[in-house]
Length: 366
Image (tube, rainbow, N blue to C red; front, side):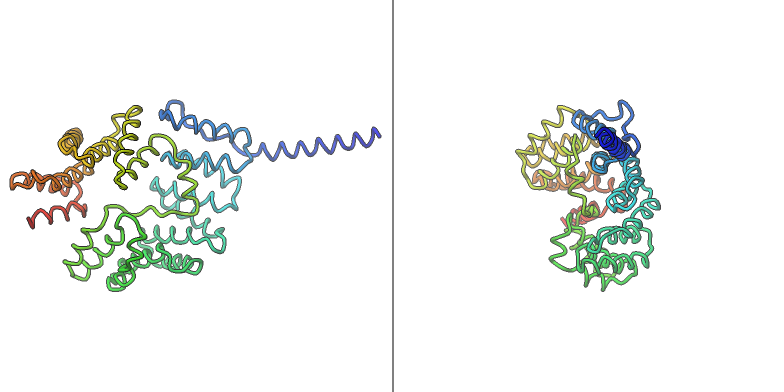
């Protein structure tokens, strides 16, 4: 009986030892330097996930959650270090390589990002198209159209006719100076409705201009936004769920204002400024909220103050110009000249600013 108990004890020790080695495998959590994170909402969340990593360094979930928290907060260097640890521990998991690629690209490390995403394409399961179309977009930016075309073909075999595939094909046609093909692909009401921020109109504006149809080009640009879309991948919603802190509050306020939910936006702005009232983004959002509340004079003063503090603040200058155009009392010849000079100042800083060009063109017709 003693012999059996001894054998069982040894077996138990071996098992416990195995569990300890497995759980203990892995490097300590990546933590920010002391004082680097001052956000009172974000800091305790980082500490919680970092502690979870150190408690179970061989477990994938806490390390991925820590990386996503850094990524969601825009702390891309710390996210990269964390994801690099993750792919070292779990080299066959596509999520690690994909997230590593995204934060590398955000830092301008495009070659490293492409290498990481190429690894993700090799690991992507049969129905996962995201690594392919994302890689195609990066190849388009680099002018490597043959590799972009190859990746889009792979994405299309996995999921045909997605908006990413159509946009990529349209961009490749534009890059190959085939505007007719680009227009045929892009002039699709469902695609236009699906892609945010009027991005399809940007591409159509370029295509019509390339064809020499200035009227249709102007019409498209008048409906276009200023940004390229940030394409959601299979884990974007998880990253979004890890976005906490003041940055998350700013994003929420932006969305509330886009939806013209002015009263809720005002509540969130007032809450935000209790933590940080000097942030220039929140000050712009505050002025925008004032304009939607009908407090035009206050909004004008706030935009003007931002521009006085930074004469290269193009975002505030365009917002001020758009507000001036909306105010009936500022449609006199003298006031329109002020707005015109404001937009000309934008173009002197950013000659490629399409929205400023369109607004300036609108003024010239009045």
